[in-house]
Image 1: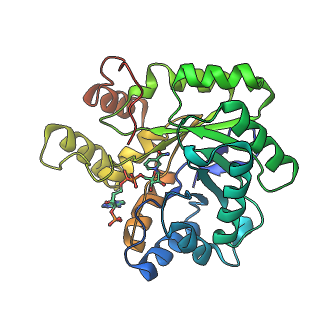
Image 2 (image 1 turned 120 degrees about the vertical axis):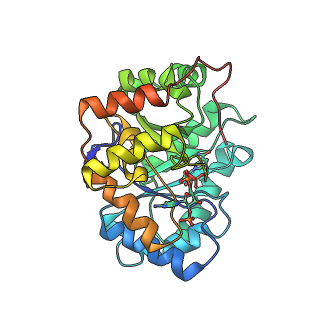
Length: 280
Ligand code: NAP
C-alpha cells in the first residue's frame, strides 16, 4: 500500500483509506471489513459523529490496533461552537474508545464563526486530544477564510475532505490546486459515486475495464488509483464486506501509466467549473 505525507502532519498515510458512512448494517461484516482493510494497509479510517453507530463499529475494529490507524472523525456544523466542539470531540473519543484522533474535521460550514471552531481545534490539539485538524466540503473562498484566521503555511490546516469521483471532478478547478499549493491533504470522499459507479457496459466503463484487464486488476481499483494518482490526493471508499475491502485495498499498489491516466482523464472529463462546490 502506497503511503504519502498527509498535509503537514508528518505522518505517512495510506493513499486508499476506509469510509464508514452507512456502515451500520451487518455489524460483524462491517468490523471484519475494516479489519481486513487494516491488514491490507488501509489505515486511514474516516468516521463522524453524524454516522450513527459507525464510531462504535470502528472502536470494535481497531481494538488493540490503535497505533496502526490514522483515525479521523468530524464535528457537525451545529455543534461547532468553541465549547460544543470540545464536548463533541470528547464524545467521539468515548465512542471510539480511544484517547486521541489523528485528525478532526468540521463536517461542513454552518453558522458558527470559523474562529470559534478553529479555537476549539487548537485547544484540542494543545491538550493532545487531536494530532491535527481540517475541514470538509470547503470551497476556495472558505479555505481563504481559514487562511485569514490561521497562517495555512504553518501547517495547522491539515486537510480538506471533498466529493471526488470519476463523474464529479469539480475540485480540480480550484480546490485541488489551492490545497496543493498550501500543503493541504485532499481526501476524496464517495470515490465510487456513493454507489453510482460507471456501468461495465457503458463506453466509459469499458475503458476502465480494458485498463484493469491489462493490469490483472478491477475497474474499481483503476478508478481508485486515478483518484489517488498524485499528492496531495487520498481516497476513502466505504466497504461493508471483507471481499469489497480486499478489492479496494488492492488499488494501493496498482501503478497506472501516463497514457492510461491521460485516457481516463479524457474519458471522464471534469466539465466546467460549478457555481458551488458539489457535496453529498
Ligand atoms: P462510496 O465509497 O463512493 O461507495 C460506497 C458503495 O460502493 C457502497 O454501496 C459499497 O457497497 C460499494 N462498494 C465499495 N467497495 C466495493 C467493491 N469493491 N465492489 C463493489 N461495490 C463496492 O460512497 P460513500 O460511502 O459515500 O463515500 C465513502 C466515504 O466517504 C464515506 O463512507 C464517508 O466516510 C466519507 N464521506 C464523507 C462525506 C463528507 O461530507 N465529508 C460525505 C460522504 C462520504 P458495500 O457497502 O456493500 O460494500
